[in-house]
Length: 153
Picture 1 (tube, one colour):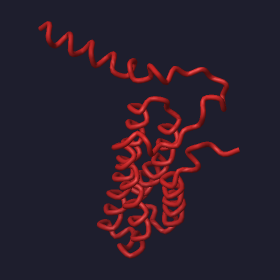
Picture 2 (picture 1 turned 90 degrees about the horizontal axis):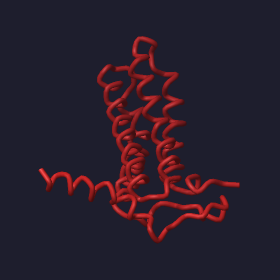
Picture 3 (picture 1 turned 180 degrees about the vertical axis):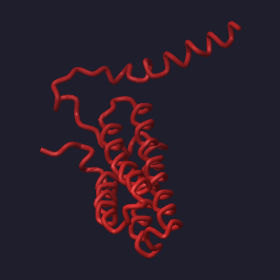
């Protein structure tokens, strides 16, 4: 059995990046452990948020998690830059990771622009009755309430 998020190329590339970070982490001297640990955390956040976002039913929820994953990818890129500036690792050594991140960020950016790029499990996989016809009414209900509050003031 495979979950739908496991079928996403962006998820697979983000796992490759996690493996890359695990590999280079052992090369970073102990005095730079805070920067190294931040890189480890941000790298692991990418696939976790992709998986969680892909499991959401509404586009707005999926988009939010994909944006968080994108932010974690950008944070990971910055953490790599910090480690280079600290001379904890060489620029040449981080290049494969940066190339992966460029791809991940591009895919996540595209996924937040359109509704069709998220892989979805069918509702019947979980024997759950979901009202797709009215899915977006709840999503925008709060927006209309807020608009009404603003116009009343």
